[in-house]
Image 1: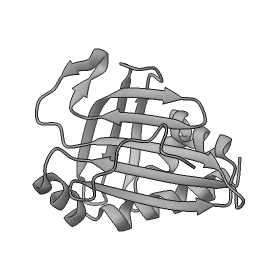
Image 2: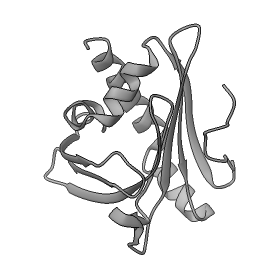
Image 3: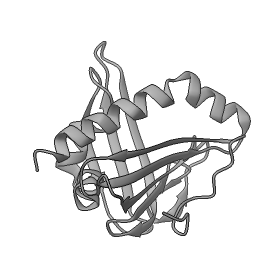
Image 4: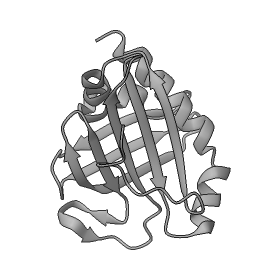
Length: 160
């Protein structure tokens, strides 16, 4: 897969999860774009995604509520930036619906999916405005958390 539709990756500022998985791209896409499916895998257990609003168009709302086992609650509202069906999705928490600036955004995320010999080449990226943002995200457990969430996504996709 080329990076034609991917965000530009800067290893000094960004984090990436890249893996081939044994499910077709259309199922990965469904898991990312159907709120009832996204809520089943989006954060690593024992955390749960309890709400999801997704207006799948540039400028649309991307909102999730994640709840932790000790009563933690993270209500995240952002903006969809780009949608290429079954290929690419980009979103950010720096902007709200309608591209309205929110201030204090943490990251822009993207997911690129492409057919591969195994099923799908999956590339998820978290791009940050500065080194401190990247470091904070790494320390929050980006690599383990996003990998665990992908495992949950794949398990769900195999049931669809």
